[in-house]
Image (tube, rainbow, N blue to C red):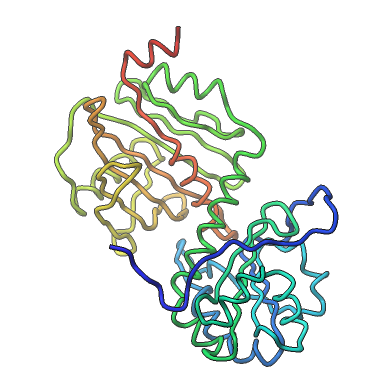
Length: 344
């Protein structure tokens, strides 16, 4: 069933460039979103924008995923290389924001705004590499606040998707650990694109479990398997299994069940059970966020576990989890005959 989102049709912006220059890499913090808006529009929309984007997560301390910064449109050159940008305003107005909207949107897109067919548009890398721009334009009615309120979840999802893409680009920008990838393939028959800087921290060939770590800050991705298909998991059993792994391989870590949730989900096309929450080590007085996936692989007749967790005191951790998610997303199992073909 096709779902229609009220007031929202997504179009790609066409940005006019007078000359071709090599783009610089976007700078600034990846959790900051610069909102280019006239003072009046900013005062009217800032609360609904903050409600949409300044969502709070616990890792274990509370942190806002994004933080908004108001920028005046006439000072756009001061923000043109920011990682995240939102331009809001009315079409066909006399303000600098309206002028920028007219310059950035195609005639077709402007027509859709005037006809109340679409109000939100996006553009990747308009002025810099790894940059994301969203334009929210109103013909006057409906008001900008109404457009944002009706589409706040989708606005957040667009920025989350852009942040994930940037996190993946960043974590792989220096290259890959080809030797460790080859070792993983040979020992466990698993293909994984491992970014440069991840070293093998622990390996247990008896229980077929391995952990790769990158620092600083500490980002860990682990995986292991049992040579049999497992029954469906639920919260308590999944927590016990994660705790047993923490006790054996993560220096006595355990999970805080009161701040952990479990859910059935899909992982790389497989039915899976996911734990997401906070790990703690009471002896070392440490903690941080984690995600663990449990799933069966029919191709190999194995039950797998993939765990990602972060230790980054004093830093925001949400985007480090994104980096690890992008690595986990490259996981692939190979049948024995396919592996033999690759090795030959």
